[in-house]
Amino acid sequence: MEKKKWDITIIGAGLAGLTAAVYLAQAGKQVLLLEHGSRLGGRAATDEQNGCFLNIGPHAVYKNGAGLQILHELGVAPSAGELKLGGRLVTEEKIHDLPLTAFGLLKSGCFSFKEKAELARLLTKISKLNPQSVEHLTLQEWLHGAVKGKNARNFFLALARLSTYSNSPMQISAGTVLRQYQLSLGGVYYVHEGWQTVVNALGERAAQVGANVQTGKKVTAIRGTHPEMTVQLADGTEIATRNVLSTASPSKTFELADAKPTSQLGVLCDRVTPVYGAALDVALRRLPNPGTNFALHLERPYYFSNHSHTARLTQNRNHVVLHIFKYLSAQEETSAKRNRQELESFLDQLQPGWRNELITSRYLPRIAVTNGLPTVERVRNARQTEVPETVVSDCPGLYLAGDWVVNESLLADAAYVSGKEIATHILRTEMSHLSLATGARC
Image 1 (cartoon, helix red, strand yellow):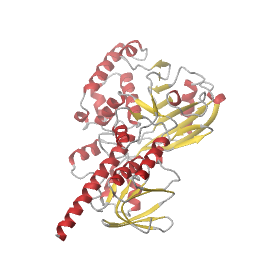
Image 2 (spheres, rainbow, N blue to C red):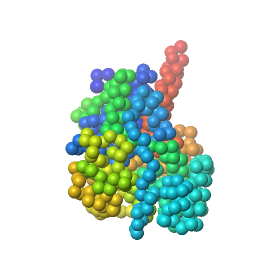
Image 3 (tube, rainbow, N blue to C red):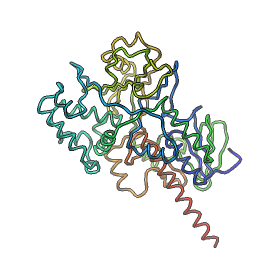
Image 4 (cartoon, rainbow, N blue to C red):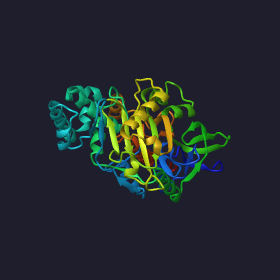
């Protein structure tokens, strides 16, 4: 690695880094992709425990999402099963059927007649609404004018949490939420044997087109500017490169670049709000209550899904893998112990006796859902600025990508899109540099 000068060195082999690596390498660039961990994927990796495949929190592929389009463009076709509609809506008093159709809403005992009519009008309106028209409002501001009934408002907040994996209605842009909700109506897939299969396929594709993919390489510093940049590793190795693309969090990149608080990276770190969740993953020999495979809580930020009902996630086809998740709020202090107790109690409601069927479990008290919430301010800035946040203008040659980037997508889709967009930008910039150099020589 240290014996040559790379066109671009990418830090982080998650979805954004792998996507960018493929686009850049197949365009003829000399690409070095460095991953700190022992495997590819970052938060898209999958752990295998006792013959069960556990993603790092619940993951879904949006059927009509930009991410799936990009994967197909890169020659990667995930093997997955499509989620079937149906489930439960849990309240403090009772468990109801989840109303996912007009008929289901009409017969639901969870809402008053007035709330049913209000929800019916709201969901019809959302399906036709242009999300960009309400980007300037927070979700809470938009809901205040759109929904009056308490249970009706709570129901849409539950759907919003499900779509965005976040619980910050006072900060997130309403337009982002509605766009993601509209996308979810097209259906989602759960990936067979976990997301590691997608990650590995992207890694193989990157290697096929010429990228040098290295794991177990911890980056400790980024120095210089284009075209004389250096990436330093923990073992002292110094890598010469023309450009650096960091897919680490903005705060981690700020640290690696030793940037000043007043720099573009410093300002970006002040703007972004990470989103976290608590995840309890449980593998069982059988499902005690086979009629319940999906559930949302109306008043509390809880999610439950039997992903193995749709995807192959166990070597023994009779076993099941459950994801129970709490969407954490940026405004609230939480206790890891209490969150686990809450998630286990929620599972007790839905699958009583589950402990008697336990094969293995894993609790992740605070996982990063995304490194940057799409707030009203950030969405507005993305619309108005000519230079995207991913181009570090005061450090030429340094670029950023990841799921925190504000674009028309969210979550994993945002990571794929940002990887593609920044790769395209780098290729155009390098072409411009080449043209200027050729003109100067002439």
